[in-house]
Image (cartoon, rainbow, N blue to C red):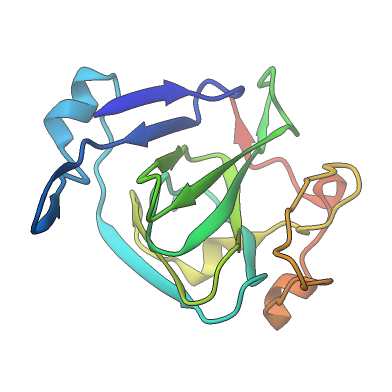
Length: 187
């Protein structure tokens, strides 16, 4: 398992090994011991799975506030996404910055998004399926979001050819800007 820090060191890209032959492949997509050896000791309590039928579907930016804040380990099992994490931790040297990476069923890369970060992705291909582990159960009272298109963040969302505007949920069209968020995470 290869673990690589991004430009925001707490956000990691994780690439499990694939063992392939004429039948297909085998991969350990999660191994607690291997991650612990890389300094990642999180207790995941829930797995989530989403499918987005159309390219250009944007989900996010989402986070949960304490005491229900979540770290996420995100992977794509079908298709491809551009995945983004935004640092919401007051006092962090990367506060208000974002990092993005392409995750796909082809590149087999995962992203570890720590608690204290907003997370979202846009699908690059049709019928994209994303699975992710979280460290806290879903808590509706702590479920929050951030505007995907906040000009202060200036996230570069790549849209697939032929898609002019992302496909959003009603909830994601009404999220507040970064400057409007209360301070809930600190370093």
